[in-house]
Image 1 (cartoon, rainbow, N blue to C red):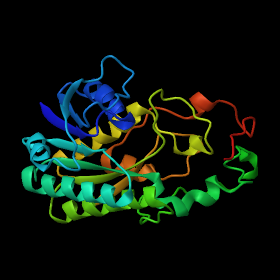
Image 2 (image 1 turned 90 degrees about the vertical axis):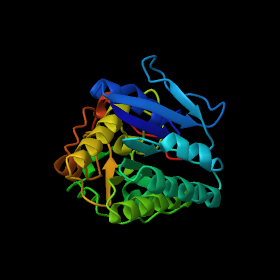
Image 3 (image 1 turned 30 degrees about the vertical axis):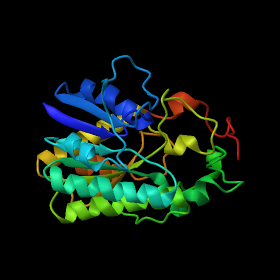
Length: 273
């Protein structure tokens, strides 16, 4: 049995992990810790439904109890403002270090941790990539390396960079820890009317494949210390480096945003706000 705790497991990413991790390996026993009364984003009735009511930002004793004997911990919870979010991250990672130093830890970062490095491709008003005018893009940009250091351009990216720093700290102390730079994950796994969503889109199943690959690579003693990876599906028009992720941990994404967006060569234009 792989005893797995999702801190913030009722949210969109957690819902996908609860659904797909047990499908990838029946050994996963997934427990979700979340706020009392938190809505559940899971749409699949097969999603694991074992829950602990917990506010990780204030209840240190209950948090530490929930962490006992875990093999895998995935930190997904978040709150506003930034100062309170970072304080919760401090609390969670200190508890992990004390209670389950042998657990594999996945910290929830985001592509937004490196927002200033890719926004030129995806946010400029007349960007051919953002507007799906792909014939104008020659050559296609080199995918943004997983080695790119955090360069956020807003509080959301800053909070994710802070999580990455904690993952690096755990890695420096010998614990298996990875910062997951999640792409665009949504409960229906479909498209969103959002600028350049097709470049960051990630199917929930692929997010679970990533976590599974991280865990098994760590248990095999082959996880690169203090790693951070982009978690993106196998999108035709990807601008992020997932080849390093494939090579280092055996990540095998199965989905492509074009299956959901359809069209090519600028036949679809997304809203620019």
